[in-house]
Image (tube, rainbow, N blue to C red; front, side):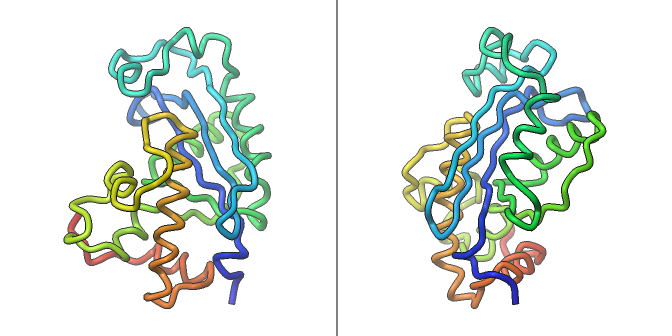
Length: 202
């Protein structure tokens, strides 16, 4: 059996981007992450990233990030290797994100464009695992803002990367408290749960 959840180092990450998909030209504008183990914060990471193009107005309205804020920010060519160094080797850290395919998709796309081999990280999606432990009677959906309100997270999500990552940490730990009921106490059990379809409709 693999390490217990309390022994595992998780890097909980969130990205802000200039749009919905790298396939349509959107790029990363901010990376935020919190490294945690045993319920304690080890280290945090926050970096604005110049996407190489102007932001759509609705993105600035949503995030509060402006073109002027990004003008002198590093490019993703500098930001991504720095962030991968923060995460560490796949044997050291497990990645966590809320709606992980979105964030991981942007990171993998950036890595591919830069011809950087994407490390084989284990990835946990807090949307997927929350659907296993919460019923529709608990919450109508599993958005980060809904779960943040339900669990009473210390940080309120606000579409900025580090704050949203901090809120996701609180959501992750609240989910962990409920996983004992499902006999999920070790990383391999969590990974198995993450792969399973949940009975929820939303």
